[in-house]
Image (cartoon, rainbow, N blue to C red):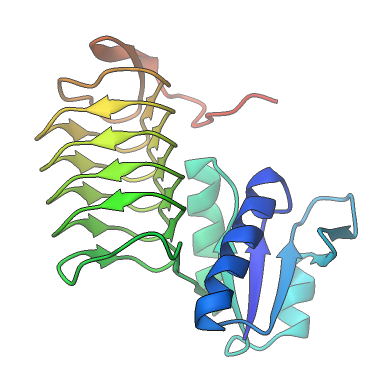
Length: 219
């Protein structure tokens, strides 16, 4: 089996390291390749970069699975659908330091990085990215294509929607609902519900404006 890492930037390099650490224990993949549709380098970390069209021509869907290495939730959603439409599947990557209990469900394409804590009876949707040292409390539900950043701490019984981005070092109180396509700025303190499609920040976090552009990172 080949693992295609869709995105050859910084997150892609990080996910290559994560996959290699998993492979030491599980021996899941025979080869790693980067997939990137932008013009640029031909290799990263000694691994070939090819376009998605090239990947479709080179590999059968039973021989290649992919992981999405981009941090924009809206882009993650677009690529997930593109990959599924082409008949390929997304790999689940969980760092060996992370323990997942029987009552917790991980959707296809979910990535959980090193030193995260995931409690019991958690439901994580498809293509979710949980970055290092995040803490996910019991009975949480996290929607598709959502990104949980480093040092986020989510107490129990929370619901986070689809295509949402939770920034660095955000604590979230128990039984909070955060909508879909919402951005919570880094360092914010979430002690009350936040609606869909807004950018929220502060202590307590509150909606500042509509998330019109669906873009977290500026170029």
